Length: 354
Image 1 (cartoon, rainbow, N blue to C red):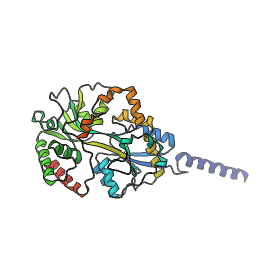
Image 2: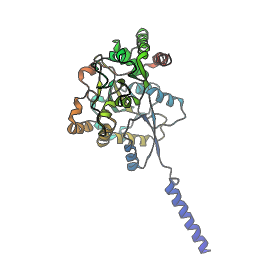
Image 3: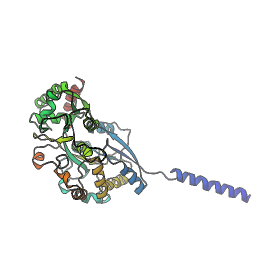
């Protein structure tokens, strides 16, 4: 009887150990993180898991509109999302976000004060900045022999079949509006129709509409130039495995979009405290430094920037990393268009399907 009892006890212990080792004994917290493609040093996800024991389920999207549609459709639970400025405003307006508990985000103290309390979240209640930058024109110097300092070059028939456009309604429409001298946030029907007509005319010389592929296509010589984000140039610039001295980045003199991407917690979140732990982790100066170098975008973290300035002061001479104040003065931060967003979407859809 004792032998039988001992065998039962041993079996129970082994079963308990098996459940523990498999994670079944105590449910492991899994954070669902939803971010732009190619927009984080993914080794940092492993580091967060190692430090905290919290597992990351990491998914990506290609536009703010895709992300918003996914969240509004329901059926998916995300704990941390990375919307751009105007999308943050829209999410606040639609009551889609949870307010942040900054007691759980002490590294917020490292965020540049100039990047707090901006128009898209004036009380800094729902978001913390992740990266910031501009949109401009990435180009191959071996294929372009004109100054890349105006939006007009994206409409130059000289480069027909060698021009890439961003498949993003705000960026494409914004570039067209700015070229015509209008605000990138215009809600004037006539201005929008003019911008659409310009895009329809441009379509005759455009290779296609793309996302993350733009930087590689230009670097490989598959196209001469393309509308894209400043960080795409910086990612190539910091790639030590190849020589990208033939790649340039121009910010048009007419002005551009000054954008901010943020970290927020949607109401679908199931692990708010752990989500705030993740945000705090990403704001750690060492982590922010590593992420900025890996991805290429400008960090909002002053300590990370100070280290970059000490180690690589030359990057602060690059407009893609540190745009001139005169350019920023002529630039627009996207705002939430409210119901007028449907006008942009309709006009843009007509461009794509024409």
